[in-house]
Image (cartoon, rainbow, N blue to C red; front, side, top):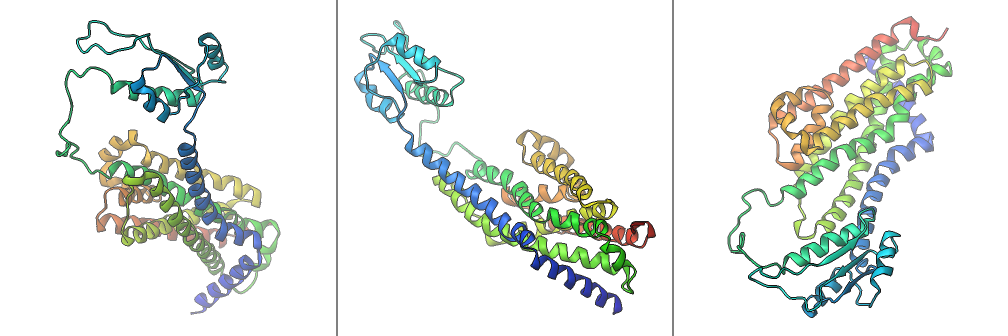
Length: 382
């Protein structure tokens, strides 16, 4: 009972310190939402740019009448230009493309006389490359048909999940983004909460009080976890906005998830954050200064981000599939892997429970290590 009272005392003291620090509140509450909001805003801006930017400095010579509307739709101008001057402008990235059709252009279905279309573009100019793809698609529709593929529109030829590509894009992006926003919000707090007290010699005063050292460690850890939970709520609020903008970009390919999917994702990410916070607290306890703690804390975070990247990389899917259920046995890695599967294809209750349990146990073990370090006199600055 006394131990719980000591933990509560330390916890309340740390929470009060957090509430008084406007910088920490900004990082924990506003930053996660802000990152998600800006991501959604950038998506909207990119979408608006693609819709509005329909006319380029792209020109045609001898364009046939039947192609004029199609060329205009993909951004070509009907202005008359000089060939040599335009080619030079394309080299200098002032103009984007020049397409020259032969005079009296016509398609011979028999293939006896094949007309040659000259397309001048600049591969180091993104707009020019984009136009190259568009003009190629347009001209493909004019080529003589030797055979057709999947011409019957009443038949569904794609036998896979029609939402798979959109879901895969979301599942590849969201796990790493969530962890990044939550951890960035609390990293400074987690790395400084012990090392900072040690550097300022305040920890010496705390450790000579009647309060158990293990209670001090657990109280501080719970305070950081409370901040992590606040950051997670902020991140998920921002995620709602991000998902709405993402679906706006996908248009007819937009996907929706059930409330249970978001709840499961939240729980899994919180458990992952708990495990990571425990690891950072060990680093904070071992570090001699706050700066050293912040520097060393970057290492596990970067490893975690690398794990999120690997789980989202399609080229790594074969390796992950081969490893199978063993992916769920590695703390923190298992959460990134599970979150992707929740958003992509669904998971079993066993996988969810084992992932959460492993991360919680790992976090508790880390807190035990911190308690042991607190009980070691060497932790006190001499």
